[in-house]
Length: 312
Image (cartoon, rainbow, N blue to C red; front, side, top):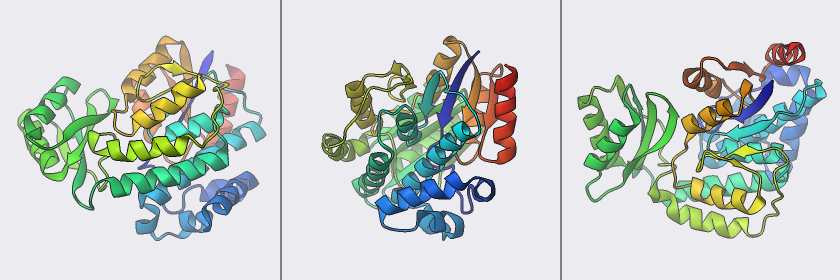
């Protein structure tokens, strides 16, 4: 049996997240306290009490989700869980995967994702960018729609999340044109997402340049567990390559379908989503129905995963 842990990105946050887990596991609030000491504000209180508008600010969301994932990762081992064979994270979640792989220190990761969020937020003027989800079209159809809609602006396919589920991003007007073209092509749904930052498109290149400068001062080690990175959809352990791909990730598509398919080719049968929400668990089943998928954000979920792993 081969196993993989996958870590979610933005969109999985919610006010009150991990509240049930914290009632049973002291490591949850302990991990949030570590993050709060780095950030200079009470991250746990914000996650539990909001307001939602503040939690959804990308420079807050990113540390919150990273911390939630690492808290659950720690609890997995406290509960007797074993090391997985592979790790992967969706966008922001890649930082969680690198902490889990012991390539990146948790405190350094918190600082990096806060900066990442700040750089992304300021890279494009407020309301000038947009993202949209396109459901029911082939990847090639979405790519062609973006090329048709772009004109002298930017719009491109940026998240290949599952067959028939692609996210696009770019300048607001270009994304809106692409939405209409996708509808004409027969998309089941083509809808704007409630975010203002157009992640993973070329509008983020300036942010990536600044992130690269910051990464020069951060210590990276080789990953002890292979990490499937978003940019290449390949297994990476080399520290320099891991760091280079984090920079490129900001303005390159998230190849999540390819990443999950690679895990299947490697013989992975058990996948654990380690973080708030169940977004990645749902995508994993859409990509490969043969996978056994677990989520460990509650005591019941953790125990179910541990029991399944023990039996296997």
